[in-house]
Image 1 (spheres, rainbow, N blue to C red):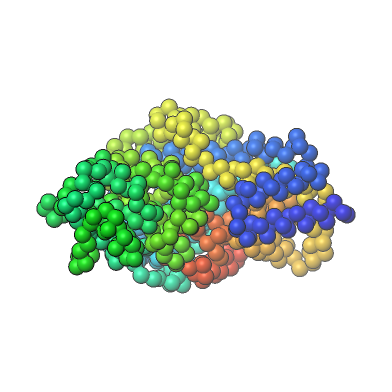
Image 2: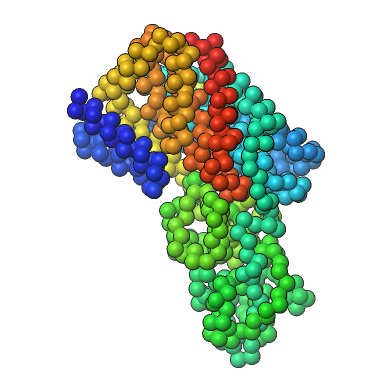
Length: 587
């Protein structure tokens, strides 16, 4: 009894730390795993068996395949085709959600949404539509599509593997479609025609109207005769500026405002463009011998190589400050501003710790052709289609789709285990240079992998020490309310848990409880596992519940309380659809 109390207390602490969000969830799970080992609930030799668990390996391979499809030119191709056919907002939102759900069924749903995000923003910019109307539906459709197949989302992969513990086989590739497909279709129809009306729509964000507006902070200064800057290289001058002052560009001889590069030497009477705190203007004038023009025309940062990029959930910048940004990509990109959950930061950026979902306003200060590479290295995703994103040769796209289709064929007809089929797919992608040796490690979302690997042995303690059976036995006393209500209780509790902690961790915790409850009340284990799979994938109430929600918060200009307005009726609809489907197909 004492052991059970300590384990439950540790699990409660784990959930609270996840909800608090102060520390990264992979770090939290590693610390808790250490505590479980320290208390003797997990043996040292079993502590890291999760790294070899089929579910963990499958998630890693799906992430690599998603990246290979993205690098093949798939994004550009979809964007070009969509721009040809889009004529109205209703048509666009319906096509977008169907496309997102379809892609999410066969690749990682976060990767699918990340591929469609810049396309959506680009079309909204061209058509002068408000992105807020489309981005939350895009995130939700990506989550819904992940419910359709075994590989669409980590909870499905975990539930499929856990089924082996209660029966002789795992769920097949399309077993989740019996419930997921109806949820997906009705969910898309609801969002496309009714749900989008529940989303608050704020000011339009575009390439010419960025989240972090800097026009009032861009100034022109001319180099005076005798200035210490004459014949000095731009890169040396930049190194002397403080964090909040950025040399953005110059005014050419024709009067055009253009970028300025590090190797260029400065000349007398050359006009430079700065992003600067107004209170620092006088100091920089006297220090470097510059003349300030007060009557400047305002202009957009796009002319000066400005670009907005979002910090993705797997970014190396998360938890770091400006000094790390400077070491990593500071030679190529300058940090101008930051947007976080409705707050705009233009100065004192060195004090801010980067978080997932932050939108950074950056200026190019290096070679343009290297920007995409630096974004990838830092885990940043540009919000607008730029020249460095355009792919003109789509031959690799057809090759990548052909290879992926073969691997799916082998999995669907159970000719090869999913791990072997996907491993061969990744190897084939590497052979056609869609993935390189370095990128294979960089494109794996290691925080998710570590979380899964640590949560699996932690979750096993619930069964090993009889806690799952104890909870299931308590819940079974209410079995007289009927199977449908028991499934509703499991789905609702799993939904709530998934909204505050990672969905994969939710599946690991809830699956043994649901399975033991099914055994206690003499019902199908498959039905209760499927209820957990549905509930774990339904994180629609907050931006922290799912990484898809986090990614669109910045570019959609959403606030924390906006999500439940669409998410709550959607979750109620999902319960109404899923319970009869689960009973019909699995009970």
